[in-house]
Length: 478
Image 1 (tube, rainbow, N blue to C red):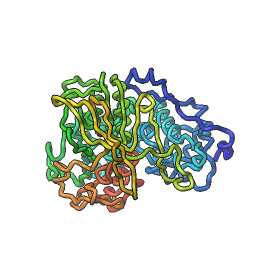
Image 2: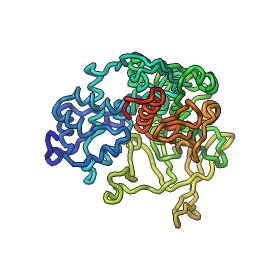
Image 3: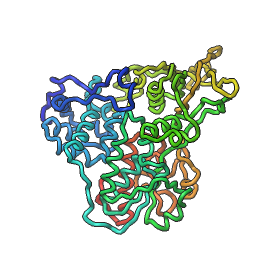
Image 4: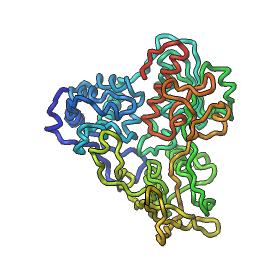
């Protein structure tokens, strides 16, 4: 490393945020980048730790000590080349990844990990600003055509790798815009969508064809695609939301989180209300909002509700409150279970843990409150606490309890692939082949709901497996 003692001399410093009162006025990103000289110093903190556990923590296997050293030496273009050799879309992960690499950093033993995510984002943003990022053209074509179903991070990474190997990929997306949950699941205040558009232009120049408004299994059949293409890759995500089948579920005011987030993202994109909300507007303005589910989607509902002008926001989590700090000797360098407070929580939210919703209460078909009960664990079993029932006022409830797997109707049913015990498309990470000939699967459709960075990894690895299947061998990296 360029400065082996940097971690002893420089304190950890990360990006800051605009004040909540200011950022709640817009839908724009509000992270404040660090100056270049500060980034150089932060990169110097990457110690010569011998075994870089951050490699294990990063699903795409970014060469983190290498690009940190290059940033410390002010060799930004070389750092970009290194980063892009393992990650197709660092501007996405540099904004929305929870940074398991930092959890695995040796310096995280004392809670001062290297600011890897911030440095990664700065590298790729500088690359775009300086014009260093350009289409990477294949020197010749292979004559092989590949259909990729789904334009989320897995499908995009897979398609880009295909184009760079010389194949002719076509991405089929059922929505009106490319991006999957990157486009319609992540709010603009976390990741502005011009970042996706920029990558699409690069990929089109590399030879990727995009087809929006094509729902495979509905608009076009799987059989037709298998007739027209050498291989079909299923990268449609895990879009079936987990429901809460309790009394009162049918009341007006109870919605799946993604229905709410999708509407707002389409408004920010400039769509008129009739297109953004064809089934009726879902708005938190002037309402008491309850979000059921403690993950990232729930956090996104909180930030969106506060920007729309909610009177109050409460988040309920069925699990007990995690510790504020993990037990380092027990869990490091693995991803720890601990209490995480997002920027959306800081903007205004009450949080309650170990709570289950028993029923939704309403009048004249409209939601008015939730009846809840507190939970405790006895002998490893979750039990209701006798006499702990209580009510929460609510005009609007968002179900953000995760996803149970891919939607079966259409693509999955027509592909006739075997499913695993969890209901995902069955395929392993060696060759990503399904049980149907010429059909492969990757991303959340194969592994279940997961992170953007895992989707990118699976898309890259699937492309390498398909390339080897088509050509007998592959030079693509995994």
